[in-house]
Length: 139
Length: 167
Image (cartoon, rainbow over all chains, first blue to last red; front, side, top):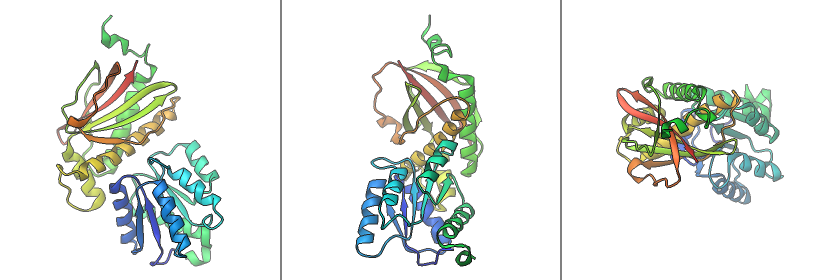
């Protein structure tokens, strides 16, 4: 599982959902949690963090947002060699097969359907960690 | 021919019983998962220039095929505050601006589930970003439109799902 000092970025246009994700992450023991209100602001924050050599280590983003969607943000990260390996979880109210396939093709680490509970987010985070860093470290 | 008849399934296939069923199911499933009492649905009806007397309204613009539509969800703020309290673990004042942000997210979840259910049954509902308002501030819709209205109650408080079809 991710270490307790992992640097998270939570992206959602609704403050309520950012608070919910942050609350669950804090319940799981994480404290270094940052927020952005849409994909465009998130991309700026991600690039700034990378520039000062303090990159985000996991991004949890909503899909449906104004200015830049979560999928566009994911694609932008994947197109940047310095960001392409950052674990990226999409959180969405939709669970259509075509969408899940599109997200998978774009390189999403995990896909979480809202509403979710702490147990679901923990399970997904464990899977993200295993996917990126291997089963041995995840145990 | 009366205005109501224009809303029949012949002219607006999207306003079919199947859609009503998906809407009710999407509302019920989402609200139940969010810790509020299960909604009780009343008989749906069609209307033109219908006005909700609820306090908060969320609007989502979308298209079914090329037909421009709007989903409007009208809520009493009390059950919304109950759901937000369950989500956040903090007390929420039903009259605070936090309710507007929360009702936007809750409506996003409801519509996302309705869309998923409907699109698995031959429809092609699009998605949009929800806009939440105090109902008194909802922009007046000047384009000619007709609505399918599904009333429901949560803890005896009146709420409505309105599907608006523009001509």
